[in-house]
Each structure stands twice: as C-alpha cells, then as structure tokens.
Amino acid sequence: MDAVTAKVNVDLSAIKDGRATVDGALLYDHNDEPAEIELDLTGASTESLSMLVCPTGMSLLDGQMIAAALADGRTLKSTIRLVNRCTPTETGGFKLRAKLGRIEIVDPAGTNEVPAVWRFRLSNVALSRGDEFTNRHLPQGADPARALRGGSWNKLRFNIGRREWVLIDEQLGRISTKARPDSAVPLVTASLETEFQTGDTRDTVLLVADDIAVAMTLAQARDVKCISCSCIGMDGTRIKTLSRDLLVYPLNLGGHPVVDNWRQGVLRSFIEIACSEIARDRDWWQQTVGWFLAVQVNKYIEIRCASLYILLDRIAKKHLVAGGGAEIDSTLPARLDHSFQARLHELLNELSPKWDEHRTNALVNTIKEWNAHPSFVKRIRRLCEVRRIRQPSKDFLDTRHRLVHCGDLVPTTGAMEEHATELDWLVLATILRMLGYGGLMYHPWLGDLPAKLDEQLASKGDCSAS
Image 1 (cartoon, rainbow, N blue to C red):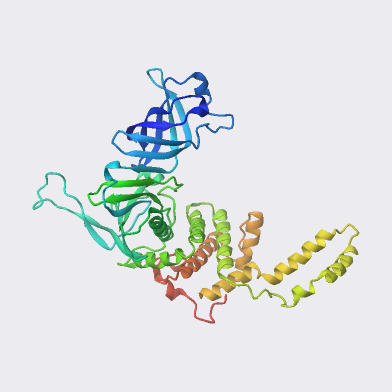
Image 2 (cartoon, one colour):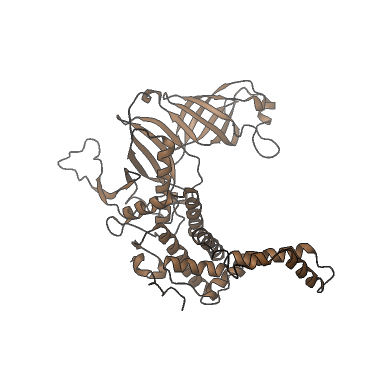
C-alpha cells in the first residue's frame, strides 16, 4: 500500500490514553483508494495496549471518529471500522493499523475553485467495446509525427436525468477476467463523469450514478459499484472526494454478459431505459439486482435455483395484483365469521378432544390467505401472461417447493442443469420486461448468439405452457 503521512486527531480515552493527536499515515489499496489508517502509539502504556481488543473480539476504538491533516495539505474525516492489528516497531514503539469506513478528503486549496465535473470510479466494468474511440496519450518525449498513438473503443455516452454522462472503461484491451491473478479481487476499471450543474449536491448526483451501476451490474452480470465520488475543479483539482466503504465481489466472479455492445448503441440504449425505471423504486431494484448477482457468482446449482425461485416470487408479488381478494369466492370472508369458526371447531373436536382452538383459528386464517392471494404457480403464470413470456408448466414450477423447503433439487422434467438454465432465463426475461427493455440480449437458453428480446415474446393468447 502507498502511504501519505498525517497528524491524526483521535479520542484514545477508551484505552486510557490521554493523547488527542498522534502521528500516522493514510494507506491506499490496490485500486489506489484510501483504505486504512496507521497510528503511531509509541509511548502508550502496557495497560492501554492490552485494552485495544476487548473479550468480544471487537476493539474499543471501533466506530471512533477521526480527523487527519495529511502531509500533502488535504484534510480527512472518517471512522475506524475495524482494528486490524497492533505490531511492535524496531525502535521499541507500537503501530496500530485499522480499516476505515467511508472517507471524505478535502483539498483546502480547491475550496475556492469552481466545480466543473463530477467523477466516479466504478468497479469491475469490462466492456467488449464502447461507442467512441479514445486515443492513448503518447509517451513523454515521443514525436507526434512518428509515434503510433493507438487507442481503444472504450467510451460510452448516454443521457439520464436531463444530463449527459460519459463512461470510460480504462482497462479495455488490457485486462482478462480469467488470465490476470489480481482479478480475484475487486478492481476499479472505469470512470463515470458528468458536468457539474447549478444546484447539484453530491447525494443527488450519487443516486443517479448508483442507478447506472445497478444497470451495469445487470448488463454485465458482474458487481459494478461506485467506489468513490469526486468533485473536480476547472483546473483538474479534486476539490472533495468521498471514498465509500462497500462490499464488492471480485472481478472474476459473475456470469455471461446479459447486454453488451454487440452493436453500437446497444448498451447505451439499455442503460437509459433501465435507469428510468430503476429511479422509480431504487431500494427494490438494488435488492432485486443484488439477488440476481448472488445467483451469478454462486457455483452451487441448488443455491442458484433456490435464489432464482425466491427472486421470481419477489418479482411476481410486486408486479401482480391478486384477483380482487377472491381467488375462491368474493363472499367467503363474510361467511368465515365467529359462528362458522365455532361450528368448525366443534366438528374438529370430534377428531380429537385435544384439538386446540388456536389450531382452528390457524386453519381459518389459511383459508383466508388462499382466497386473498394466488398460489405460487398461479402468481408466476399470471406474471408470464402479463409480460408476454411463455409460461412454464406446473410440473416445472412445482420443483420449487421441495427445493425451498427441503433443499432438494429434483426436477420433474429434464436434468438439473437444463432446469437451472430455463429458470435463469425466466427470471432474466421478467426483469428485462419490467425494465421496459426489448433490445439485443444474450442467454444460453436462446442459443449461442444475442437475440432481440421483443422477438422472443409470446403473442397474446399464446403464453400458456405446452
């Protein structure tokens, strides 16, 4: 890790150390993002050092707010998230290293600078190709007339929320998710920029950037997140930077790309369409795409299928309206009155004198639930009808019950891999239809080449299973 020395203000009273300021260093990770703080605790008493870790395994400094003046003139605010270790130095002192939470760094020299650009760093983006060509910078001292500049098609430009965004895959042509040993960790591979507009706040712009990351996660089937957000001045100075403490899957974990730039404009179109819908219910979409990603990174077929069935039910419950609370009979709730329950309880007592009243009440509530909501199979088949997706058979969907309740994947039709592939396609198709996307996409259930989703939809009245 690279490091920047600092004077760190931290409350050490929890370990009975009266100092308010200690020497330290801000440490950067493999993505050149600030990640840890190192504190010089030379001079601390044996009692103070013994109190760094309490019996629960937590440190008494976990959650402590810190402020630091960095040697390069910038200031830092953060919290200690986790104390990693405390080690002796060659001079007889001690140094504590701790993982930081979200980190805000401000450059005082840029506080009077006019903001020009919002810049975000994205994890795990790996485009096959962009829409625009970017020239590489020539080596220092090279003759522009003779040197081969080179470059790559690594740029996407799209419009969301009445503003233009530019995504640049900074590693296009230089990275392989399988060949590089460091692909087994999250990598910051792309930048996302948009011009600063009057009235902008970091939080509002970051919401849209996160929407784009959610759309890219779905498109790439890989964990794309906004790792940091910077406000850049007219002269290129980073006025303020927020580094976020996020859990991110490694670059080499994920599935096949769902939407890629097989033709110019395909990915741009998907991002614009998807973000419009994602913004309507951000929390729901972040959780839903999170479930989708969990399926893509997991290698166990039973866990993948169980997650897919949960995801399918989640989608159906959100987007389908039950049949007016009358799956059986609209007058049924009124007839399930106290008089009926008393007669039913009397009848059930004939089965056993040990039959409790709470069992009768539970049975009545189950009947009400059956009448108020469709069964799992009905929910999914109605969802397919609304979204014009060919319905799976009842036998296919019944596989879910034993899997979810007992952990056994025993398809009634076809092999396990075939069942998993069809189920994955069913979930993906419903997600893309909910987003309003009908363009080029890829899934192995449809064959070896990308296909237009609109051309895979069932015609009205032809959605039933064979």
